[in-house]
Amino acid sequence: MKLDLNMSLMEKNDAIAAAIRAELQQQGVYSINIIGSPGAGKTSLLERLLPHLPLQTAVIEGDLATARDAQRISACAVPAVQINTDGGCHLDAAMIKKVLPVFDLAKTDLLIIENVGNLVCPTGFDLGEDLRIVLLSLAEGGDKPAKYPATFLAADLVLLNKIDLAELCDVDIAQVKAEIAQINPKAEILEVCCRKNHQQGLEELAALLLAKINAKKTQE
Amino acid sequence: MHETALLQNLLSAAEEALAPYEVEKVERLTVKAGVLANLLPDALDFAFETLTPGTIFAAAELVVETLPIGARCLGCGAEYEAEKLPAACPMCGGEQAEVLSGTEAYLDNIEFSLKGESQ
Image 1 (cartoon, each protein chain N blue to C red):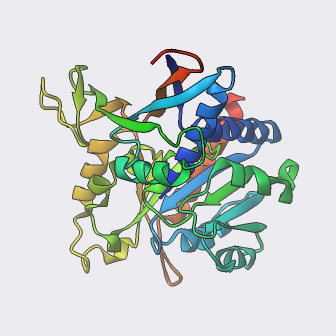
Image 2 (cartoon, rainbow over the protein chains, first blue to last red; image 1 turned 180 degrees about the vertical axis):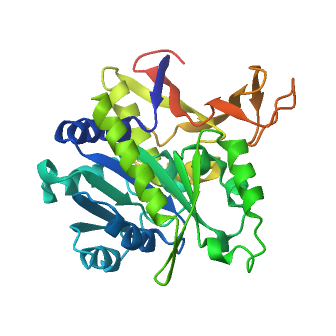
């Protein structure tokens, strides 16, 4: 006999993500999931962005190994917890749910989740976030949106990092933006640079995030 | 290799779905996956072969059917199917489209025989 199911492969993850979303909503916490390749500058982005955010922020760091990223965030005086996936290529909602009790959510405005460095696997895994950021560094090459369309399709906001390297890497920024728009016309795009002595676009990004957070609060 | 994690979910969901039945043999599991679901059929097959020995799925076949992208042109509003992104509108040539489907992945059906059922 044949049993018709139509059962999503993501069902289990999506159910946990929905529970996380409901809990964060209830506690008034806005949440962001950052996806990008290894070395794209995800942690550097946070180190430079956090000082511009007048919010109680908490950070979850995902990596295969080491607590180095969480240590870097803790050094910014922001509470951070490290998830080590021991070889796993992405964070899933169950991992987030497990570490959430570490934070005092009642006193938290913003939760930022830095996913495992990977431009493919994290894409299908909802972590209960309000906003998904895909961070692409121009040093990776401008062809990445076309090569990883599903990832860019799932982005609410695309950050083009290492914008100062565009010329050195022969990347045409306008072309990259056009290719992102072909895949995901709704995605917002911002240029940033997160070097210690050469920062760009971070105040603009902070203002954009604050506007989104306020817009969500007004909605409620 | 997130396919292994997803296949584990699939097998436990399938097992739950089969629990009310007196299953003799599971013949076939049919998965449908959009081309944007980031699911590699070969990796799913590999995970299936690795995870199923010794289970009720040991003798079953895994079939993965690929679904196209469904898109709506932001220019003229035409709805069309595509194999990849970006996908220009076949009606007006517009380059910006809203993706309606193609990221989904689901266990569509299970085929199996019941105990005492004639083959």
